[in-house]
Amino acid sequence: MTYTERKIKEKHLLYLIENKMLVSIEKTANDFDCSKKTVRRMLASLREEGYNIVYCRAIHNYIIRK
View 1 (cartoon, rainbow, N blue to C red):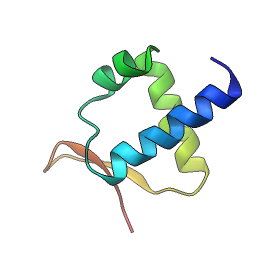
View 2 (cartoon, rainbow, N blue to C red; view 1 turned 180 degrees about the horizontal axis):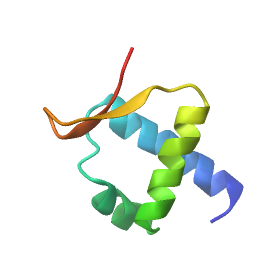
View 3 (cartoon, rainbow, N blue to C red; view 1 turned 120 degrees about the vertical axis):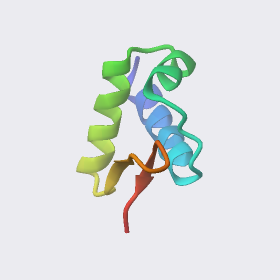
View 4 (spheres, rainbow, N blue to C red; view 1 turned 45 degrees about the horizontal axis):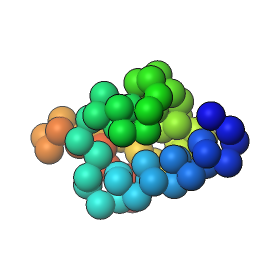
């Protein structure tokens, strides 16, 4: 995966989180054609960029905490 492809996928991952459409890391990994670890690294990268992304156990989904 090139840097550009990764940034596009991170942007789409952020879109999924903002619209509460991120079902699971495993499904996202299958959709992105990468490993679950790569998706977790993308989440970590987004967190480093300043997004406060957390997993909410109540709704079983990732959210951006304000």
